[in-house]
Image 1 (cartoon, rainbow, N blue to C red):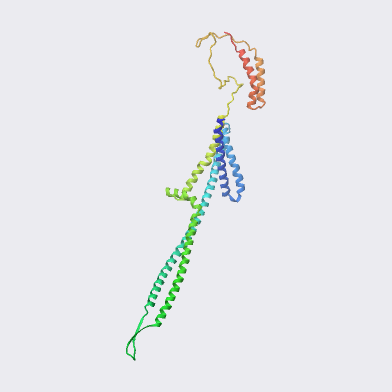
Image 2 (tube, one colour):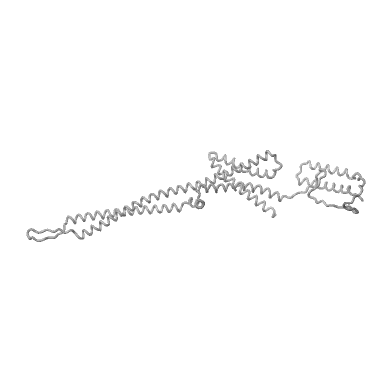
Length: 358
């Protein structure tokens, strides 16, 4: 039972790799020819199955197939490997392009948000400067109202110097103070609105960066691109070429390896009968022997010719029966079972005829 474990594992690996390669290839080819995707799926699927059958056929019957047919099947298998690799390349490159496009869209959205934020920042700086000026103006006006301007004149009747404050100047300062305070309050409201807008844009940027799945998927590729100093597109092409170089060729190699492994565990049956002359069974051991009373490397007179075999007619009858069985088209196992009894009788009769008395 243990001898079947490794061949079965090889066969399962071959089927899994072949099935996944076929799926990605068929899916990729259907995307390349989207106008007739169903027809392409049927065509590519049948070609994938045929490719595995051709690989097994070439391994099993390489020496028996006609050279022209063998050459055509080998070329066809190689071309089908290229087609499968092209389909896998199309599938993987399409998946990368989809992710890259999504990442570019999010990047452009972030750039637009950053542009808006910069404009709001500039507006907030202007409002802060204007508010600062108004605050200074309000402060100065309040100081002026606290110390009103003095007007001095000489009374004609008494001839004395009289000091008094100007009411018109005070009213003007009061109006200007009220206008400045109103402008300051309006600018404060506008400044708060601009600040809130900037905060909302910051939250939008944070959400975009947090939910950017495409950027996380492309992160390792960006690190590889930075490490190698090459553009990401070139790094992707190298990676895809490496994948397709080992994907489908590995599937074909595993199919051939599975055929080889099952051939190794197949039991070898000994041939009990072969009618050709001077036939020697290579599965049987040949031992040298010397008749009793004889020695090696010593010449002896040639004995008289043996008599006609006594069992010749019976042996010929048994051999004809064996020939009939060979022509009936039994399976190898069934044929050997039918022949075995007759062969044993033939061997026994020949042993009786070959006995020589010295």
